[in-house]
Length: 398
Ligand code: MN
Ligand code: MN
Image (cartoon, rainbow, N blue to C red; front, top):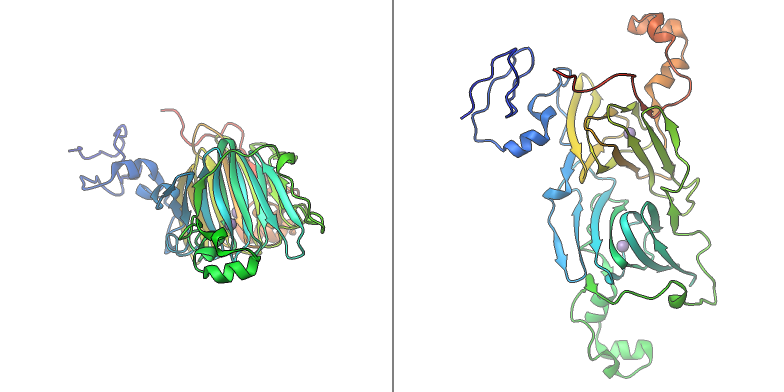
């Protein structure tokens, strides 16, 4: 059993719900210490946290794993994170040759390749087709209702899928095997103009993911359409895009302005160095759905009326920010924090607290906040999405 922690003494290696001023007291258990290690700002919230905000975090590590020959998937939807109504996310791995079968759904699909490569196929309603290989840092976007498939190439691959409806489930889509299995064979025979024996060995239920053979080159698999290929590419190379760099990190923005087919999902790929911060800001278009790719950090969300709540995130977690709520994200670890900000929108948009103040008459800002020239003269008219205060560290040496 842990001894009570005395205010002012060296912190115990076991985290305790005790603030530096002595507020709180030890937790002798029962407790989940691994969780407490991962959530230091839940155990000891910043003193500025207050009021009611719903849960804004869910980890893929707490999500059900669908294991198939050929790969796995897990998803975070409103069933797991009830506030996340605008977008849903799926984390998927495909083995070399593993196939997410031919299917379609009512929602648009946006994807980010985390590692490895995949071959994707699709067509549109005019019979124009699409075939591409997707590497690390690349995206694809399939408009709602268009049929598609994904196959792992030589090393397999892992990726994030994002859908423009929080109620989506990847286990509830329309798939080719499912339709065949639930159509009389004489109907299939008439439809394709072949004898029913042609369907003797079709799967008797939805396949979802299966183990296939690693396909040959892109060229070897090309299928020529008399109607040509899709006019707007379904692929975009996000990581290859030149970033906006600021002291402390970088941002790459992708929306329908530079990836025209992506009309319902916009994103920013953000890099935050240790000790740096995604600045205080908010978004004027929609809720924000986040996926943490590397590192660890914390986000405080401000909801007005004295409400603010802090959550800790690490690689593999999903975060969420309701529409227009203020927020910032600090890298509290020793490695670079990479994460995706996602929006159900045709455009990325954010409001910078710093820039807003810089573009407002200084006398007004000064009288409103009771601040002087030391702050007013430091305000920036240019937007810096990521900031770093020189010499600042979250964990000063003892
Ligand atoms: Mn899909
Ligand atoms: Mn944001």
